[in-house]
Length: 282
Image (tube, rainbow, N blue to C red):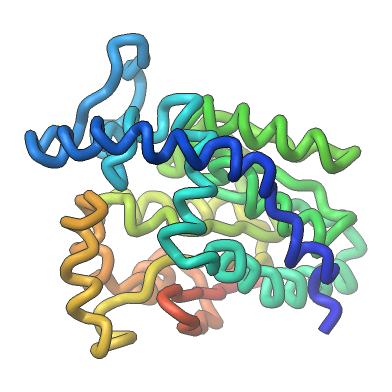
């Protein structure tokens, strides 16, 4: 369909994955001990925890040092692909079609160079996908983890001449002026936020978006979407230490989007992922 180049289907860092795969197993004794002792907010002494919100200081997925170590950043994408049986990238790529279609319409109307922000950009995988699909856009990314941003910077700098502008920042308080971005994306963040923070993050995305702009969210399915998977959803928080997942699967994100001012909201479900596409009134 011409949404992105076919080469994107095969551009995984396999050499990187093979190198770090043994480290997954070497870390397992620490993970098992953490599970047995129910130590879900445990960090190494050298990790600086100052300035991070308390809800972020979690060993999400029981991973050592949460999102705040270099090793966590190196293992994360491999862990995601293992968790989703190789479907992690495929789920992320589904944001590209609605994002590209909406931005092409905006560009025809305004003639401006499109600006796209990826909230909680992590290791930069979503920004890489967007760059491949929308080559002329200016890309921006924010994340709370300095080590993940460093990983993103290294990966993106190796592949593209125009490096996305990356900042360490909180989705609750985006460091951008009002009405600036034509597009905002967010992949697998909301299930790791407490309910009140979800609302703040959506309000901030609305604030920084230009009138007529588009928001595309990808996250986990929710309770009402797939009754046949309720057992999996109910067990997921305990199996992978996702402390805010249970509230997320019962949350009404569509209503949160309407409350923030978004309109033309539509949703889709694919595999175990859910997508929201919303517009800011032009």
